[in-house]
Image 1 (tube, rainbow, N blue to C red):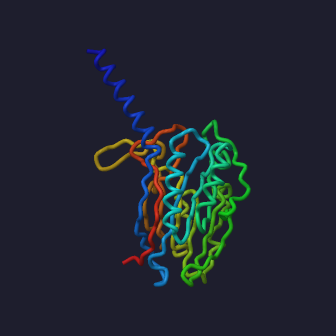
Image 2: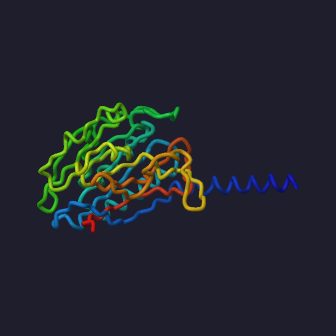
Image 3: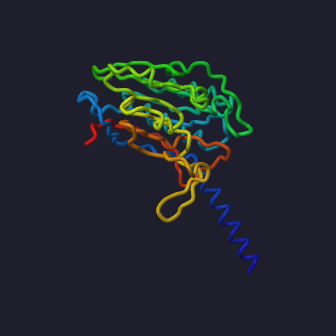
Length: 271
């Protein structure tokens, strides 16, 4: 009896590992309507590709998910591509990162804590990235671009100042911009913003839990059970927050019930 139980448990564990390995490379490529409270008519239908958490250089099928996502975004040619950090986990991922960024149109990005090895991962290495050309890297900086004749401001948060409580993205916000977007690796930045400072906030960091447990009424993320904003769309402080599940993996090369994803957000006026 005990032998049968042990065999069954071993088979279950092996199956879970095999599935987690497979899921880590099985990217979900979705279009999602993104309602904003303040959206000029001319910007209705604008498409923004949101990518996050590549973690390139880490041995995982997450690299395949990243490549699939970039192929998809490149083919769709969105108005903007915004990347919310954790691009590298190991330095050996830099050549692929730079190759992929050349294929992303109108791309703006921030870095995450893994890019600076500010993580509990004992194998993380500090990223050598100093620029991301042709993509634009924003480290506590802002850029204003013209989209359909309107001014869209993109503000990027440096993960180092954010984690030290020194980041002040509101000071960079242009009240004259027709649309203000905040790009920050950490989703709880939304709770630090005053009402109406930004229209859209894009973040990642949590991998939708990466390893989750299915329970009645939902899934429990093992790595981040107490975080408020794990994945998807939220409305706070007059802004819409989108938290990406990201594309790569960290610590372990698996995902379980937390598929990697790339999302094309289609801007619409909220009702």
